Image (cartoon, rainbow, N blue to C red; front, side):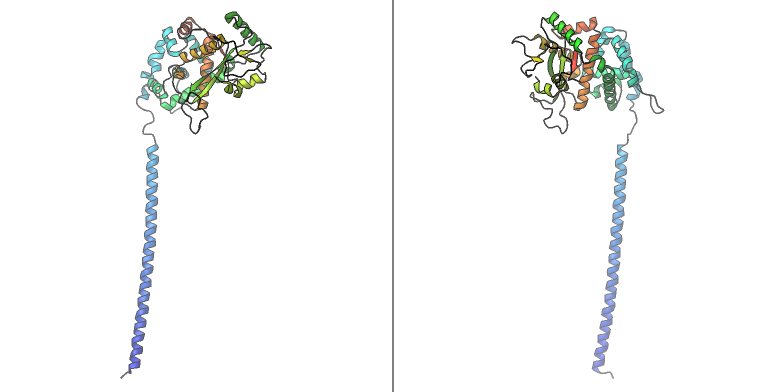
Length: 366
């Protein structure tokens, strides 16, 4: 019969063995749970990546065009304004002038001058828009002051297409006609202008009329108060020297710097009349108080510019650099049309201004 001490030892050994077995089972169970948890985390991560990839694919797919050309735009050659109206106007000179703000002859000459710069080649995917239609779109945009969207609906073109056409034609007009119609006058030109001022206005030694016009634009992004003016609007300034206020603007402009450095070949004892907003300079003199004919001349030139190009009657929704391009283009076209004035043009001018204004001979010194 075993003693009590041996029995206790056997019981203690059994309990230790059982405890070790239980510990091993607990450890194995814990490792299994950890392994299952890790596997679950991996599965969740894979599911998240798949869902994210699917969401990105849906987002990219939603950005793709549902159609390449809208059905309305496909009818441009049948229902577009260029086909239905513009070509009909060629048989009616006065209607053509009111629509395009120039005669049919002036339109065709202008087209020949810029045709090569605005002509694109057809491709297998689409047919290029004819260059004459591009010119019609641009002139209509300037003449009416309508938005890109309105012009797009009229001509059955896309909104972005109209915008790119207008900017393309602007660049072609500036590149081709700027030096011809806004040249830098030479000394003989200044003397001729002074002679005309004396003969027409009885104003001696005057070589032009200087004034500025604020062209209102939408507030440019991140511009602060850079384009904010005393009229509490955002604008760029058309500072023009007309032959037939704004002193700080003049001094910082190309025109003002050229005058200050005598780079414009102005003859001695010739000057520009000014108002109180411009500083007193050797080449800037203020006339006696009273009606100022020279300033009236350039103000009437601005009036003709606004009457012809109604885009000046609304706030330009354009970045400052594009607004500068619009202003330059309209000034070139103003001089181009005035250089070949017709009876139709004369009647329009007489109904919109009180005094005949001359050409804009310099624009901000550019």
